Length: 479
RNA sequence: GGCCCCAUCGUCUAGAGGCCUAGGACACCGGCCUUUCAAGCCGGCGGCGGGGAUUCGAAUUCCCCUGGGGCCA
Image (cartoon, rainbow, N blue to C red; front, side, top):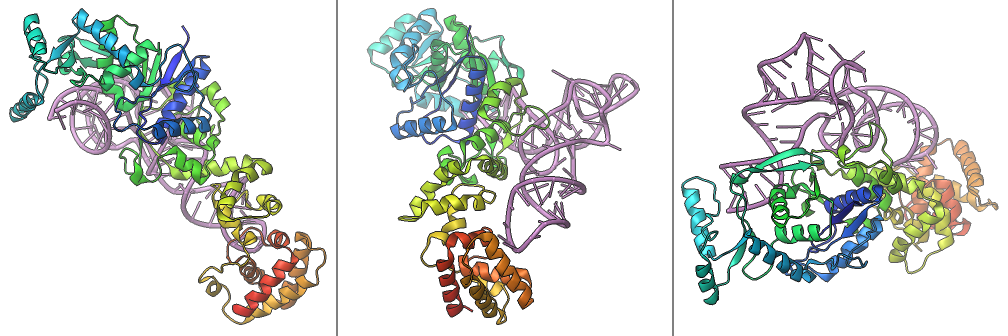
């Protein structure tokens, strides 16, 4: 039987890092086994689900390069792929469960249940539903229904024995039935609960491997019992541990960006995201670090997925992103950073930007940073960083240096980096100043910054006329 | 509170009884290169949560504790 896995997000917000990793692992597992990867939207909580979120999740998954074989936007024979459109299926299976005696109406009110809860608390025992409605006589059920009481529906769990989950990552986990409750599978408003809907979906979509977050581990015995009650074949389970923030709490907004779309916007590359996420909880061996999606399809395996929760390391992601930026062809990098320049400048010289790429390629770690590295090249008037002048030499050598540089450069016809360097170095020797002082002064006058791309190449790019203009006005106002 | 999961450098991890004087990567520190910042190269710092047990021998197996997390309430 061919492998079928799914990623089943709730469209209540953006695709976040944890979800992306789960999707990635599912995708890899499917591809590696020539199986099917399915996208299912768990939008039963319609109050919090939005169309925008669905679109954004889909967009982010595609951006990461994770394509699915069946989903809301890709037809497949097990659809529909949105839970809100599958209500009729849940009702069908609910009916079957009721007929087989594995589900029953529960007329207990929330007040009654609350009272039970409080009593349990008082007696310091664990609250468990007392199963009062489990064996209601048929006539009584009928009578209550006729009085149009709106019952919920509970699943009749086995009362003894145990359910064993053979988790592909964690191994054997035993849950005693005595610990498990007759949980609600249909609410009194006629909507299915998560555990029921997800299970029926997985079963009817013929999912063979459920790879999902750790937070569902405790739900698994309930779900397995639904499969069994229905006589359906259970899938394999693999539970991934969570991604945590630096404080070891589940990753959330207060730890910084958690949405994939945010990373995309700032200029992270999908290659880096995929590589980083793959390594966050999985490893191939003791040294290999770089993996393309193709590599991962080849090398990924569930039994090398780590059991411990992983703390998200933004630094390492950035480092990886810088690495992938350096691997890019210049023309590709140009295309990627252009949007950031369009956002900042009404118009700019695209040729110039292309030529500037080698100067920043080793320096940027996120695409959006390219603007701060090169803005001086495209503005009419540079902004001199406050306090920067004070950081370089304070005596009057500043004007001396800049005048000398002006003189040399103005006499230079072949305005190329190498030539620029030559004449300036001559000046440095002649004036007997430290190269650092000389060049930092010049850098500040030309770019307005003390940290910039390599100076001579920068000056060449700026062009003779503009360079001289900047020197002149800098001398006038600052030196 | 009940049940469940997890535990190796600050972080991600390698490690499935002797190959471990615990390996790699990020971060950090130092050096080289150098006009700044990077990149690159070289080097350094740094860890098996604690206690028992099994064994000739334990990071590795078992038990307890502690800590973190999840689900249910």
